[in-house]
Amino acid sequence: MTIPTQKPVEKNKFVPVVNSRGQKVTGLYRRNNRLYFQTRVGYSDSPVKIPLEAENLREADKEITSTKNKLNEGWQYRNAGWVEAKDAEEARPAENRKGDEGALGRITDYSFKSVFSKWQEIKQSRVRESSRKCSEDDLQAWESAFLEGGITSIRKVTRKDISDILNKWEASKGQNKVSRYRMRKRLATLRRVFRWLRVQEVISDIPWDSDDASEWIGETEEQQYRPLLSKEQVADLIKAARKDKGENGYPSFGGVLADILETMTHTGLRRMEAFTLTWRQVDFDKKQVVVEKEKRQQKGIQRAIPFLGGNNEAEKFFVGLREIAKKTGRYSPDSFVFRGRNKEDGETHVKNLTGLLIRTAEKVGLKNFAFDKNRAENKG
Image (tube, rainbow, N blue to C red; front, side, top):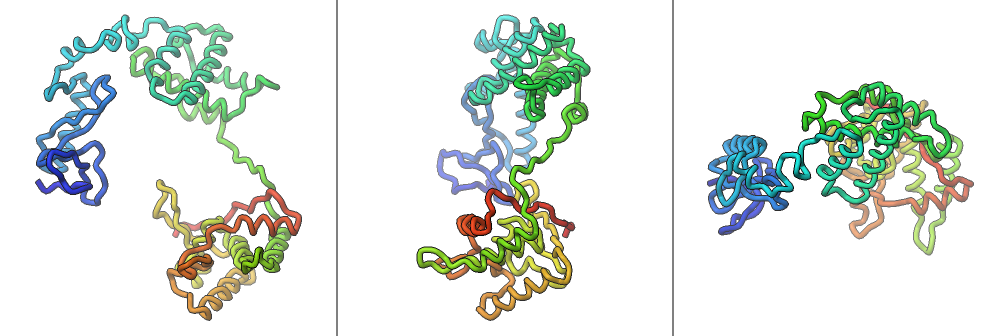
């Protein structure tokens, strides 16, 4: 068997399997010359490893799909063998059997208190206490609102009922007023309950959809809690940074801070984007800076940020920085524009200038401020 593994294969030990890219294949292990699929079976708390007959990853993928389908049909894997769905049902503990007598019994009482309690007992038995408490508070609010409106069965809830309750919460004043954020959380909790009821075939469909939720609650408005700096205030901050003398005998990084602030002003770069800026990212021909998204879902996506302002101020500024870098012998495509002070003598970027920024801002009477987040972006 030539299937690659994350670690060298040792005798009688399970080793995670990796694909051709070196990425771990979820749930797939190899022991000696056989593949195993690890999953949870039935109501067992501990996962089990089911042996596969596959000789390669493609066959293993097909066999894993077949195994999952079998488990979904109620089959269980016990004592190195498969147990049919009917036999598995009879072998379950009484409290876990399907039926009216168990904790997972069929729903016969459609009152809100009964349904909400059963949902929490079944679906939230393993969540954190804080999350369980939030869900409990949300469901209590819904129960009170439904009963106040004369609705006693969860099967009779309609789209209009949900809309009326949300409107009432929004119109409330004082301590009874509910924020849009809280309404959105409550609606999400109720939707999880209705999804579960649909699986249990108590209801045929959920009374509302995501478009309804957007219509009722609207989009979240971004709030700016700190005042944005004006151009004049930024200019004062840059001047003060260039005049900084340093502290405790250390040379000042005020000039570097001033250059970073000017870079952010001319390009609209975020703080860490400016800190980690390399000369390769500065395109003098197209008069733009190219940045790459670092978030997992957007990694690899590039954005071209054009120079801001007129009279070629941004271009002149970057040309000046480039000339200084060339004179010091530290100009190359992969060199950081703003180098840090470390043992490698500038092989890393500036790490943190927060203390210097706060100290400089206090000199010009600024406190608790924010830079403008707006910037032009073109897909590169």
